[in-house]
Structure formats: C-alpha cells, structure tokens
Image (tube, rainbow, N blue to C red; front, side, top):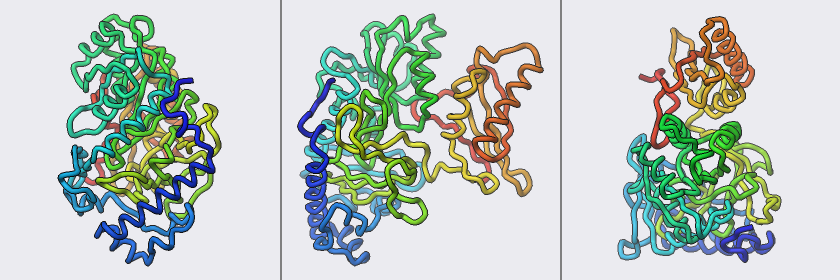
Length: 433
C-alpha cells in the first residue's frame, strides 16, 4: 500500500482527536483576539475561547456562510497581511461578488501535502504521469492537482481543458497513467477518442481517474470504470477551503478528510443538530490550520454523510461519503425535493440510455413541469417507434419511482446534448426567467 505520511495518516484516533482539539483551541483564541470579523461573531453568539473545553464544543461556535465571503469582498476576513500572502485564487461567482481566497506559504504547503496524501492513497507515485485537465489560473483545480502530483514524484502534463483531440494524442504519446478532470469531461474525452478510432481502455496507459468538481453517482463510476478500464476516484474540495483537498483511497469508500487539517460535521439541514455516522445532512467544515482565510463552521451546502470507523485501508481519519447534491441545487417540483444526482443515478441503471442528460424545469400555468432529455445509448437505438416508446416509458416510470414526482422524458440522438470542458451544466430552470 502506498502512503505519503504514515505517521499522520495512521495516527490512533484518540491521538488524532487530541490534536484536533488543540488546533481548534488555538484557532479560536487567535481569531477571537486578532480577527474583527470572528470576534464580533463570537461576541454576538456569547461564546468565548474559554468555553471551548472539548472537541464537541465546536457546536457552540457560530456558523460562517458564503454570503460572509461576498460581503467582505475582496479580503475583509483575511488574517494575513499582504506581505505574508504568496498567492490569490478567485472563484467564478455565479451570483454576486466572486470569492477571493488568499494563501500564505504554509497554506500552500498544507494544501499540497493534503493532495499528496490523497494521490498516494490512490496508488500514484514516482513513475506515474498525471494529465491534469482541470482549469489553470484563477480556478483552484489545475494548480492544486499539479503541485500535489509533483509532490509525490509523478510527472505532470498541465493540459488544462479544451482541445480534446490533442488531449487524447498527449495521453497516448506521453503514456499518461492518470487523469484529473471533471467526470463529464472524462466522458467527453472518451467519446472523442472513440471517434478518433482510439480506445482509452485498450490503446492508452491510463489506469486512474481523479474526478471531482461536480456531483457524480456510484452508477456513473461503474460505467466509467467498465467503459474506460480505469479506477475512478472521487476528489473533493471548494475554493473557500483551498481547492481540491480530500480524495478517496484504494478502498473507494468515501474521501478521507485529514483531521489535522479540517474538522468536519454533518448537520441536520433544518435544525442544525449533529447527525450520526451514515446519516445524510449538510456538511460543515472548520479549517484547523489555514492562516490567510480562516474558516470556522463554514456551511458549504453539500449534502453527504460521514463515517468515523477505521477505513479498510487502515487510515484513521474520518471519511465523507459521496456528495449527493447541494442545498442550493435542490429543485422543488410540485412540493417534492429533487436533486439532479437522483436523476443521474436512476438513468445509469438503464442500459438503453446514454451517459448524458439535461433537466429542463418550466412552469405551465400554476404547475411546475420537469422535462428530462436523455441520449439513447447504442444498445437503445432502434428504427421501430414501439421500441423507443418502450424505452421512454421505462425511463419515466423509474424516474417517478425514484423522485416521487411525474416527469416527462425526451429521448434524443447520441451526441446531441451539450458537452462541457469544465463543470457540466445539466439543469435549466426557466421558472424565474
């Protein structure tokens, strides 16, 4: 088993929790005394550093929200001076101001080390060639994976996104053994390769996919692995936390959240009460060692569950299960909560449909209307109308059983739905247009 930092990754749970408490106490003291933002928040919540006496006391601290970052644009929450900063990253900012994240040298070291642990746990190291197809520049994905791969001694192809035929050629010519990108872009690469007469499974050296930046289901993983002949690993992170930071290990049973860097809670979305292992709720993260942009109880909005038992790989750090959706991605259709990930999961169980779909939500009169456009797979193509009607009816019934709401299904030709080089845009909500 490959491992980057065995002393920390296999630290006994009791020792890990003691370390987390010490780091939490230091963080709270520092921010109470030196951060006007956090001092005000703690005063308003009537909590003092002296009130933090156990790790469970984290629930006494106030939450932090995405709106706080936007309201303090660009650097109102920073606790490092310009002289201490060595880099900025900026999120895309789909609503309001973008999020600016600053980094000290220590922040970059911890970010890179976190990824080195994760990539090593996926079996990567010296001798591997990692093709990084996340965007470079202001986006955190490309540079994060780039430095993490270099830290473990792998060679890096800084491909970024786009020019997909050239990506396939580089993958072959430079004998890439791993690729880091969004799941949807990897699907697109596979399709382009097939049009070029190239099989990723048989004609390349690719064996590992590091996939993230958008939700994807376990069924999607199975299809990717079977089709492309690789092991597909989930990776997680957000711009606010640093970027991609936590990945699955070889066991593929949730991504490890390194406890010396982050303290994770999973809370009930309505009450804010902590949930037990395996119970699904909203993930809340406290970054224990960030210097430039500290984060205490940041409500990310991702829906997941957490496991606290020791992983089959032997690592003792908590594992967070696959993100199933986001609070702000949730669609309410006729009073029913619907997540795009539920649609994907259901479609991946039907061999007659392809890997790409699109959800269109509209309002007809006073009622919400949901249309799912899905490509037909090669197995589902037929000249007989009756066969296509049967496939459509099957899809509609399975979606209704999963979502508890009736949806309309439109079957479309393979390759007719949009492909995306970055994050996929699978939902079009016309109700507010």
